[in-house]
Image 1 (tube, rainbow, N blue to C red):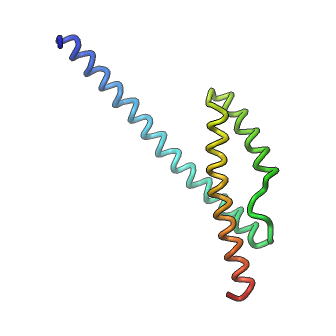
Image 2: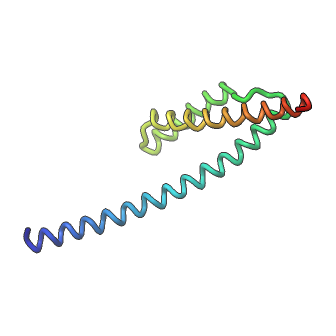
Image 3: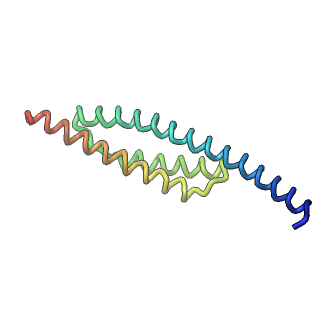
Length: 111
């Protein structure tokens, strides 16, 4: 390998490290944003459980999917990916809501 090839490889590796650092920062921000989101969905779950509301809201979920798909298109992100992400998150949220509803029913039954 020539000195020029080594220099180009070193430059590429340096650029790669910089890009990966940016990705790591974005990943950290996403985790913090998800944590914030789940704090609010826990509030929703407690409110639903306290008032006997169902854990899921299919109409809202449909509206959110349409909204997020449109946002994804505007952001040049695959809308199918945005929908998959949302469905994954909603499944987790519904599970938490069902657990909260079960706890509320147990409390109401004196358990």
